[in-house]
Length: 205
Image (cartoon, rainbow, N blue to C red):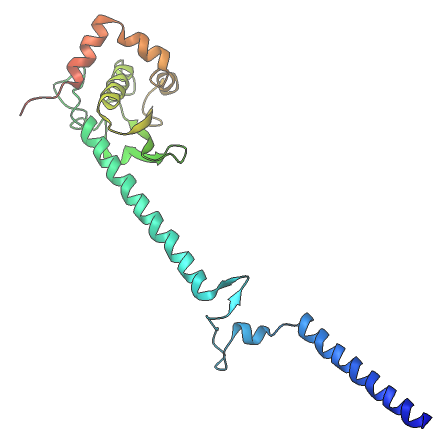
């Protein structure tokens, strides 16, 4: 009787150990093959990987791409609108527009969103003076800024610079045409204001 009891005890203990080992294997090694492949060896898109299905992951990749493209198209459209506003500004010295003299050009304008605000943008504009020692470069930059400030229908920040390497004092001029206090002071000068108004006046066609 004692022998039988011991045999049963050992049998139960062995079974318990085997069950524990099987359970441990399942916990330590989840069914990765089932979770990642089907019987054909192809990825199983219905299984969950890190809480997201492969199908869902594919959707997540396509949605941002589509949204980014939409935003890029919107910014390009806005840049084209900005160009339409400034291209007809008259040169302070010559009887031509800034577009005709290639002082402003579409490739020199690009837009970025301003601090993730809705309908608010930074307008980046690079312009090229007609000669490296142009004495009217600052005035041209002032005309561009005033024209945009009066015309843009959305919240904005304007950043105007001279195309790198096209003017002998571009760094100094860039600071002047982006300094709010200097701009305000310049527009308080009656003679300078009259000249700016003349350059940005829209011609009647």
